[in-house]
Length: 508
Ligand code: HEM
Image (cartoon, rainbow, N blue to C red):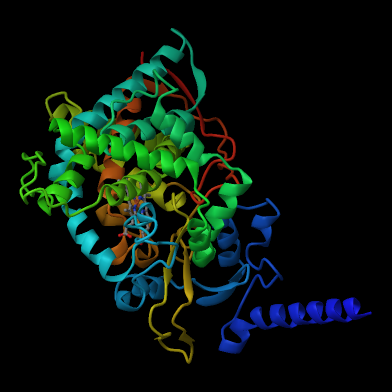
């Protein structure tokens, strides 16, 4: 009998707890949506129907409210739909929303202390130190490395195409290899050719990181939704094998460089300058990193490994998908394709027949294409911040309480006809000076404000290199019928469900 009483009490308590938790937004006077106990807005994710970003997009479309309360399982979060308010949160009111509130434990788990995850003053200090690594001068100096990866992409495609006629290929898979090698060579400073050697160590680790087993899904969800739980997992020694392998590889590379005084023009070299000299050298011709501080290290190897790992996570899928979706859209929009080809051709001609950094910078129409791809397919479909100080929503009596998770659906805003006329059509012309016909506050594919993407310029250059090389070496067949890409249900980034097919032939 006592067991039955205990059971009834437990069920009643659980019921009251859930009802109370899921009434948070009512109690705070905010409208809410997706109130489905116990997974809330993530119900479709747990059923394997939508990815996180698409579930948030569904919530965006379900209402017209400027702000709307959600439940990310048991955790309340506020979806900011109004573009100006979202923009203000990221820029004007940054001091109250400076962190992302995701898992980070610098002391016990330095690999978690990437720039993306870091908070407060530590984030600010590191961001200031890293910023000089991403200037156009530094990117220009690193150009050769990316260029040679682009050449390998071209020769791999050439080897796969018939002498005459065309062949359909999954450009996403090739762009993923391209992006992996760009990161391995120009960020980690490794000698890697994944096109020729698909069994190399870096690619093997990357495959491990991107596999989707139960353990990785639990850890991924904890990182974002329940950072305290992830801290617990780390404390009890539940290691993530792939992260450890990446850490070990980064340590090994740092040791190799430092012991042998190897100097290369890549991001790791700039991190070594930070480690040994306290700052990144602002002279784009100076890449040496020997100690100027009597051997005192300003950055631990683990902290370097944490940044490299983050740059990998932030730059891999984003670069590969932006390049693939752009080529796909070109095959659906013949006029845009012609203009993009002409732009690439003219820029190369202007620079003495060479596809160099200046030619890439001159490709203004291609840049507009990439901007339009980044609108229609924001690689990261949502942004997030945590409210670090109570904040009154302007022109309302609502207060966002400290500790509230803020979500901004980039996919929602970028495909909202209130902000972008005819949002499904692909129009790079939107961004050309005379035509700007969109709401600028709603356009933020690289985020906005002091925490916007630090690698945006690098990402765009690498995407442009890949596209310019494909356009100058191959003919791309126009699709007879337009077809929108279907998105998959896995991962944080916006991923195609069935790859990105395009039909190519050798240039006549
Ligand atoms: C097409 C390529 C890329 C896209 C679309 C992209 C997009 C984004 C977005 C949307 C954010 C969040 C910004 C925010 O919350 O306001 C972000 C942050 C970040 N990205 Fe990128 N990214 C790209 C390439 C890269 C590359 C190549 C790197 C590094 C090598 C990189 C490093 C970072 C870092 C470190 C952050 C966190 C910045 C901070 O919190 O201070 N990204 N990126």
